[in-house]
Length: 494
Length: 95
Image 1 (tube, rainbow over the protein chains, first blue to last red):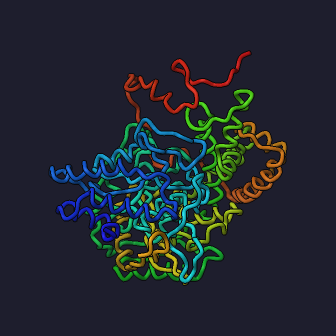
Image 2: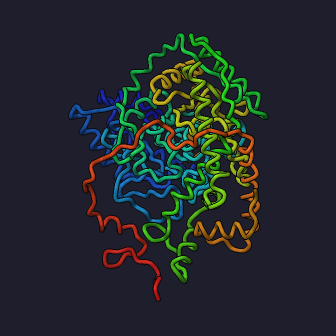
Image 3: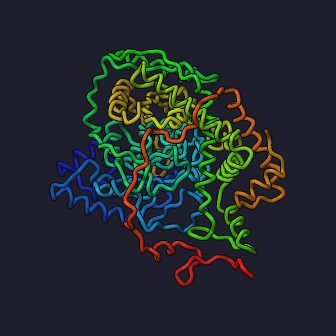
């Protein structure tokens, strides 16, 4: 049974298509592994009966000769996606009891291809956080611990449950969402591949909104090939999302040629930030050498406004969040706390329903959008955002893709940064710039820290350049040959 | 720019979030830490720079002005904490 949970998505797909394994079999193996890994807290809800039902239908699809890439693949879905009749609360108290009457476009695409839902994965409330410690359902534990340590580490965030589930082999792959790094940073912390596609590549319809100009869906997977297969299923134009772009979805897997000869890889000098651990600097250099060895040309580039990306993000994202989260009022869905007037009911509901970080960002957002401050904060930030996007545009006249570290550190211990919001925000220093520019980014596991924790490298591509991005990521993955798995400390000892 | 207790109380009211007197003090500190930090954007010269309105160059699509969807009253109300006679129900607002 355990062999089935160790399969990559592409290996499982091949075995399913050949009839060597069944969807029901591989789904059952994962449901058993989930049961054994409860202490990771990576799932909020497990949908066992539904999973077996979907798996049986997937087996029918395969027998009928209608198998596709995702058919029969058991996956976890981040709690941010609306899934019909199933818990969808973005790990927030304010959406208590909410069961959507509709299905998000991205999950509907996956189900149409025959994927199997194992359950809903834990996350930072409303996708606000970088450690998955902001969930109403409690923190997620990273399956990885430092060598010889019994201290829990964080899986990163906000897609922390999705990342921990794949790293612990209790899901073959998972959906995440990325607003400022919420797929890539957890992928780096858990030794996975995490892809945030170009803004507009996936429909946001049915994804519970945080910052609408930044939010994108993407996969967390064990390999680059797996990411290519899952991305193809998730992506596509959707008339219900006016920001989704109407261009065909390519066969991403076919782009994995492994040939990057003559490709120009940009290395931005501004990403050598103060206080970056030497081992991350070293890994980055190693990544440069790997791509050179594969025939790429490395060019130095400059992204001069990099240091302003985080402060820009922490104006734009809270502004959009304060507007988006205004809909939670105790009237339409979720929690209601009674008060002595309508206004009092709103205030009490929202005070009790939102966690500390969400409340903080709503207040910041309300302030920067309020009369008298709008120009100084919000308009200013949107102008700097134009400059940040312009930096990338200029850089892509000299190079095809950009290589950087994914995060400034390996996974830190649970509780270590929870009391200092700004030090938590700095986790996203390398992922936020591409988000602000709407560009695709992918994190590839590249090595271990001196403490034995995974470290990722990030590749940033051009808008709708996912094929090239995945191809370069595949080369990086082969060169790094990262095969390590976390030592199992949870559940029944092997 | 920094915020004081009165400003935070005003923002909290605009955001319709109840913040108790005790919480007000610590919230002032938290918000000022963040505002001090984002203040560095003041260093950037943005003269003549257009504010970003769309991250990917695309025109908003138009569709025909026709009713294409709807008729979901019961589904819309299904998750309401309180629904009566086919409507959302809220505490009394008119005496």
